[in-house]
Each structure stands twice: as structure tokens, then as C-alpha cells.
Image: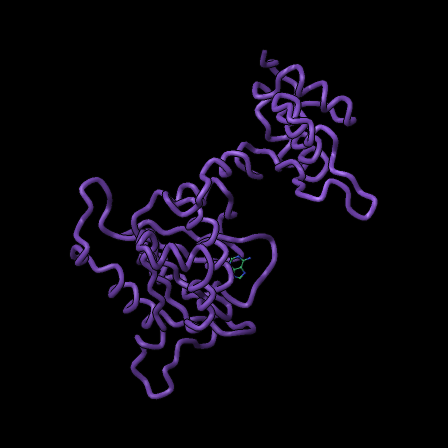
Length: 267
Ligand code: ADE
């Protein structure tokens, strides 16, 4: 996957040399380039912002440097990489913003299927809206929010999104099976995990996990996942497909004091 990031703080992205993302870059699974937006300014102060029309506090990012950056990184002509036989030539533009669509594991999977992502990191009060409106006339544009809080800018959001997406790329995780069991994989939080020693500071690892009985272990993990989800994330619990809950799931929820969403009961 090719990824371009435009920011006025390229130094923010040095952690992307580390760990598994660093390895994905080294082995070519992730081809990442970080660009300084000020490289597309032409005045002596390398200005990227100005006061907002209509008044109000803060500054807004001017459209000209952004327009030039997007023209350079998403040219109308096919890129040197060439058009892919079954995919669009132009990247998918992602603009982190507290006003964007919520970023979820489902969106991470969707983005992992793209061949080229282009991130535009806004600062201050954001980017002049015309940049996004114009970009949307020629490529797919998604404003994306990490959550219901406000950051100084999009850089940290890009680090988060890239980490979530990169680990889904083929060949990045040693054990891809773990993707199927982790939190959010099936609309449930993951059960708690333990390692050695079996007893630590008076706390024991649940007996079932030491039993070697894979059937009982799978059942225990599912029960824990259901109870955890119901307790911690009522929103996820309410969104569960009732048909995905069998009689044993419903009994486990009942024991934990929760009412399973009504509907058809799976066998
Ligand atoms: N930029 C500022 N706040 C943000 C948020 N919550 N998510 C994504 N980008 C942001």
C-alpha cells in the first residue's frame, strides 16, 4: 500500500520507523512518504494559515498550499506507479477532523483494501472547506474522527489510523489468526488474557484456562466477551445481531445479569 501524509509537522511521524510499522516499511508492504505542507508555499514566511471569514477565534489553513500539495500527490494523469488494473488511479483522501466519520475497526478493514491513501493533516481551526470540496470533484474524500474530543491537529489521528490499518495488511502480523479473535473483530470486546505464572500476588489465572480443555476454554472466553461487552459497551451490545447469539450465549448473559437483545435464537 502506498501512503502519503501532508503535515506542517513531518517530525510527528518519526515513530513510524519503529516496530512492526517500521518493518512493514522496510519490506515494502507499506510505502510511506511524509511531506511538509510548507514546501508548497511561495512566500518568505511560508504561510499556511489566515484569519477566518465571518470572524471567530483561531486561524484557518489557506487553500493554495493544500491545492498545490494535492495536485502534486494526486495528479490527474496516471502516477509513475501507473493505474492499477482493477482499481482507481487516484488515492483516497483522508482528512482527520473532530467533525468526521467515526474511525472504527470496520473502517480500518476498508482502508486496508485501498492501494493508495493520502492523509491531509489540518491544524488550527482546520482546512479551508473549498480544498475538500474541490478534491471531492476528482477523488474520494473522507473526513474521519478518532472520537468525540478535540486534538491540536490531525497528526496523532494519522498515527492511530495508520497503525490500525497497517496491522491488517497481508504479511504484517506473524499470526494473522489473532485478528479474528481480537476486540471488535465480531462486534464484541475480547476476553481477558493471562500468562505465567499461574498465581501472582494472590491472584490466580482462572482454572478453566489451565485445564487444556479447548471446548471449555472457547466457551469461557465467549462468555467473558459477552459479559464484558454488555457491561462496558452498551452501544456495542445493543448493536449485536440477535441471530448471532445462541442459547448458551443467552444463558451466559442471563447469569451475568443482562438481557440479550430479542430476536431469532441461533441453534
Ligand atoms: N483533529 C482534531 N481533533 C480530531 C479528532 N478527534 N479526530 C481526528 N482528527 C482530529
